[in-house]
Image (cartoon, rainbow, N blue to C red):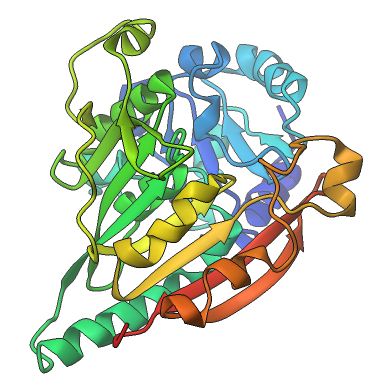
Length: 350
């Protein structure tokens, strides 16, 4: 048991640094007992099996953890450390902890409904989306209100992410509390088990199928069009009932996407289709690896098929395509690799 003063210091740091909190107590203890404000519940056995690790923050980011009992603190700490989470704070589940949480005013509202608690996430989206979402939503809302002569108070926008994988960006948009905005999410990927994981998250969080659709498709490397995948591919992942996953590959209607996300995804045949898919005033965010010194030194991805060339996006997705480039720079991530930070908006007259 940590001394009271040490535990207080940890809690204050968690509060001041806005560290996400993973609570692994049993469900009744979390939903009916005291909770740290903003904490997220995940079953300890599921976390320790590795099945839910994709829901944790990035490995370099801080995370506070409340194991189910004092006896599991070491096991949980060792498990996360072995998987390279390097900034973990473990808080022992004890009466002293919850008394101190209450004394510091860090307790959660006991009247928060379970439906709202289930919508909480530990992770953030990619840095580019996190940085730009305010500008994007403000611009889209202004355009919608101008079109409706100011009568629109709440708007629904469509976001499309090809190569979405486990769709953390889409989940964040679907579950985040946005002022006057609801995001309808369309993700496409050929990794069936990842789509299953996202479907489970959407079901658990109460995201309705009409708000989020995950399409089990490939993107043709020649035309950029969607291609259906074989059901045999899906059956390898123990085919189960589908609420959010679709297997059809009908084209996405032109001029319907308000936001297109390309995150660590590169299929050059898809690039010319982006201006056609964007609605007037819609945005493209492109954040993927660049052929530069840090990425070359790291060693992967490698090859021209997987790496953007410097200034390539500006040449392909520029004014000649009806797009206004708002941002075109490069960010270096923790492992030294370079990522594009490209943002463009389709002109209303394009």
